[in-house]
Image 1 (cartoon, rainbow, N blue to C red):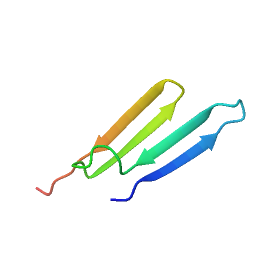
Image 2 (image 1 turned 30 degrees about the horizontal axis):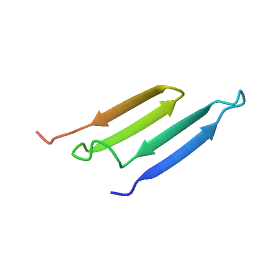
Image 3 (image 1 turned 135 degrees about the vertical axis):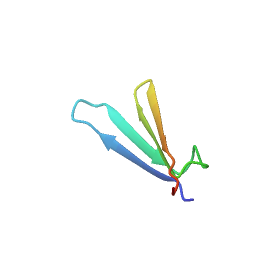
Image 4 (image 1 turned 180 degrees about the vertical axis):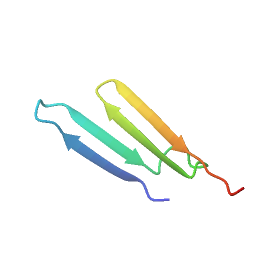
Amino acid sequence: MNIINKVISLNDGRTIEIETGKLAKQADGSVVVKMGGTMLLAAVTCAKE
């Protein structure tokens, strides 16, 4: 899976970094969002039933 990284600059000087493809590789989809000292990992899995 390719690593995709985007950085968004806000008007007040802060930045939001969004990255996918690096962590939680066993999940069907995952994203890491960073802002300041805060980092959020969201991972999703699915299965056919």
